[in-house]
Amino acid sequence: MVTDADVLKRWKYIAQDDEKLLILIGGPGSGKSSLIRELTFQDGWKICEARELFDDEFLEIPRADRPDKAIALVSAAIHRLNARVVMIDNVEFLFAPILNLDPVAMLKKLSRECPIIVSWRGSLEGNTLYFEHNGDPKYAKFVIDNPNHVICLDE
Image (cartoon, rainbow, N blue to C red; front, side):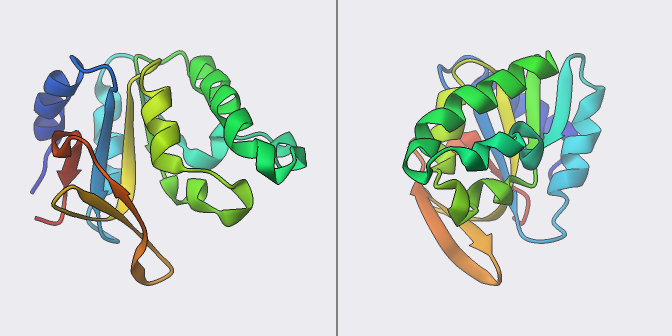
């Protein structure tokens, strides 16, 4: 079982990288959200729901322009949290087709400005990160450059 101490140990390693993104991955009920809540005791670590990073006006932006505008919008929302580390729960919101986003590319870019930990429903096979959605365990896939940026809770 992965503990908050395991996450903190891995975080010390990741904190030295340009991209400070840690993905906590697991299936439904694996404890991703609980683990993130346990980490809020760290000074300056704050949790938010992915949905909270977007305002209602985002959907008024033309669909083709949303990927570019999302970075600035989410960056501003993250900075308003005034956190040393932002922990994002319920990341599945970022996969909504209406948003027209590449969630991993966006999170990686944002993590260069502010360290980010996300809970992710899915699995990791080698260097391929899968996102599970609506019962499809391989709804979306992404190649991960460094598997050390992923902690699997189902192992």
